[in-house]
Amino acid sequence: MADRSIPNAAISKGWRKSSYSNDQGGSCLEVLDGHPTGIPIRDSKNPHGPALVIPAACWASFVRAIKAERPHLAR
Image (cartoon, rainbow, N blue to C red; front, side, top):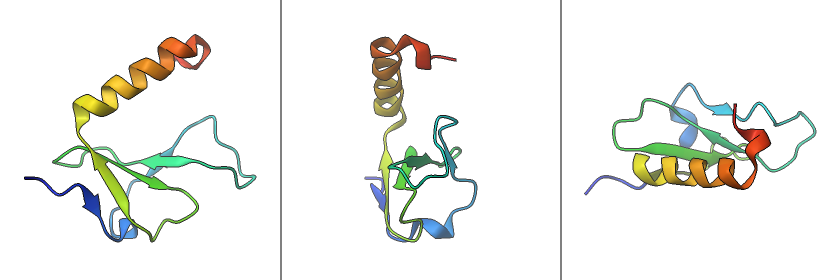
């Protein structure tokens, strides 16, 4: 079974956060593309903390649901 977490997310490079985020310290998730076992996500306020690795199909379903709920977010 693939690991479902990365204990220290700072070891991975290339994290990105939503273009809707701002620099005012709000709650944000960052994602990492290209991971072999899924989509890692982490709390942007804690970059050295853990990251959860979400199966790609589950992440895609989540994104579709958000876009369906808020069509203005779909770009």
